[in-house]
Image 1 (cartoon, one colour):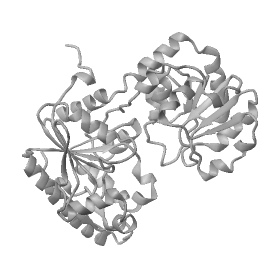
Image 2 (cartoon, helix red, strand yellow):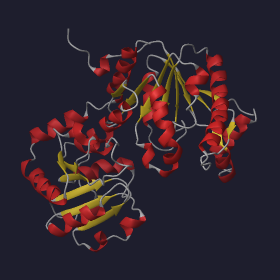
Image 3 (cartoon, helix red, strand yellow):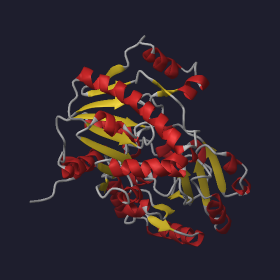
Image 4 (spheres, one colour):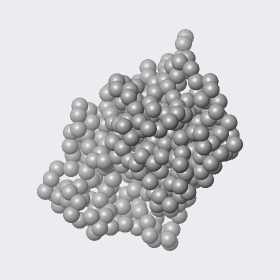
Length: 406
């Protein structure tokens, strides 16, 4: 019998409670929200926002989103809202204390357990209102607020979802070095969107699985107007380009400077907002480097389409090493040749991208990408990117759940 494709594996009629880092009213893209929508096609889903903590209340008291949460805590509004069929969003009706500044671990743990208990009580009330039973608890990287939820909510199955290496960020590092491994270990299964993170989770929990990443690629695959953007009209070919935030914590400025210096015949086009390090870099004095600034998301496909080769000049550090590079899928969806930094997380793209470890390697591979690009390769790249759907990623999560037999 043929093995089922991820998109053909489904879970039906379960009650799923989702907790995590990003509330439903976040203004940025969210893996967890996409997963929740996919879950809700065949199951009932309660998506729980993070609690309002005291320091956020003090610092952002006049923010409409804070005011809404405060009204719910005061009982002036109902915190349980129907988003769509089978999917509800919960604004917890509790205020939690801001405790991450406390370095005494026993004191932090005691106060964190109190915060967790408040959080769990609010979730339990919503579960009762909806009639949720034998829940699956899905935790999106929430290692502090949700550390004790398995104890308080007694789910039939608990899942830890790792999509970023959180311990590379100062906020999470001190307490997270103890709590995240412990949370991974006590979860029934762990799922991760990169092979690096799946292996990281596997150090603490043998039931850890790589489930891939879903991407929304319609605007990249359905580009109708293929003329060059006006601010690129005067830029000569070949164009080697990057689209995204220009942040020195994630991108290698020295690498870009080296490429631009050694190949003045290439025009390097950088599209995106710059951090302070990029603003003062030598790149701004190089004649063959063009900064085009931040652009509306809907205009990005036109810029990518105007590149001969796309780059992801990632610097390798704790923040970046485990991240799934969604940008690569966007490039490949348009059939573009891609040269990127070789990392463990990039290994799944090895058959469709050029992976470099040095500046000389980047230059050699950009030359190769320019030389051997073809319609056949473009079609292959686009077809590969098209497999990275939320349906397939959630299908892999379902497979992991079915392996647990719960």
